[in-house]
Image (tube, rainbow, N blue to C red):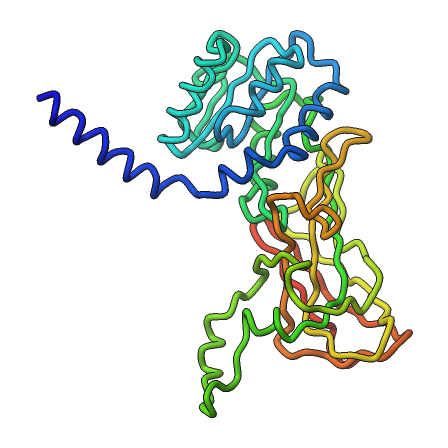
Length: 308
């Protein structure tokens, strides 16, 4: 029977390894990320406050919040193996009386059941390299409606997406193909990423063709629409072919504390995001070029305005 138990435990570990993405390790080893959250929480008056942690992962942000003086953290994590491990980690650090790990999505939680009261602060880091890919905005909107006090403090409290025009046939080829070995294989482009994909900009040949522009910006304490569309003007700095817009986020965790995955932060575990144009556009120095940016709860799409 003991041998059977060991066999079952090993099989479970194999299955859990398949469920837990490798980026969890890189994320936890991203010291600037953890420090930014610690700095943000240290600037706030959290004494005696109840906290909702959405997407608890290992429980790190919940433990930082407790260290910052909060009364109790209710930390939800929808992937059960990760939630079970977070509960173990919290217990190992002697914080089980201050942190409750809830193995559910925040959308499944209710006041009076998983939480005794509406939270006075929300902390979360459920965003990808384009900020919206893990549905952070949708989770935030739901939490504000059902799980948080009307004046709850949010960490992060603001977001901005910034971008530049880029020339890079190399990166363009990561999401588009025409011919190979003399054959037309362009039919494969039907499977190209329709919105954005990750690349670490500084590792690929490229030329920057414009200044940095703000694509969208939002105060998260305000009402967050399900979709935001904005036309952004880039001015070309040289004659060239623009293949795409490279973009990244700047998340305001607290006044004076910003977390970003810009190319100037190569130590970040996040890469940058790339939105490839269906057809590259030829740009001329000092001429403005318009692109239409649409941000939804889970995607970012960028396309040049036609007839420029």
